[in-house]
View 1 (cartoon, rainbow, N blue to C red):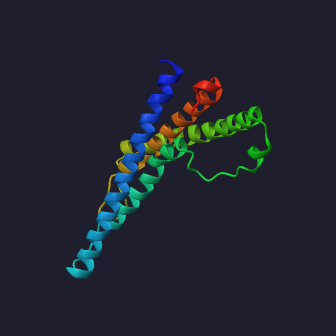
View 2: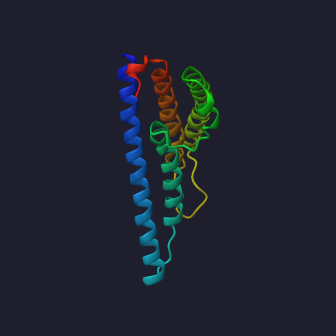
View 3: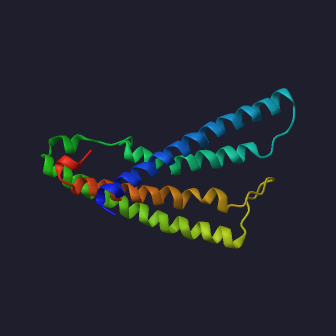
Length: 166
């Protein structure tokens, strides 16, 4: 697989992750609306909605990160890059991406371990709903794994000749 095809595949995966994260946010909004209607209009108690919305929003945050990174939507301070030459900016971006790769690799490995322990151990949430915790924990390895790939794609783009960069 060439670098260009790897970058294109990662961009598609990051875009798909962004769409999935947006869908999770939409579902959480609909569930909150249902919760409000059931609790205040129908006077019915609710048990599962708050937990589901919490898991969906945390999952959307983790799964949506690669898309935000791809769009350069994270908060950044550009004072130092503003005063650097183009090669200096590229070197600084490579150092930042390297730190991001290290951070994401550690969290990906920890997330995989946590997911596996929760899956093999049959862990359940300590609520009335008793959700198998491997389901919400899946967002950790998926989100940080895709973010790791997005950082790798960013590094490949930074190392590519200028005419092949986005």
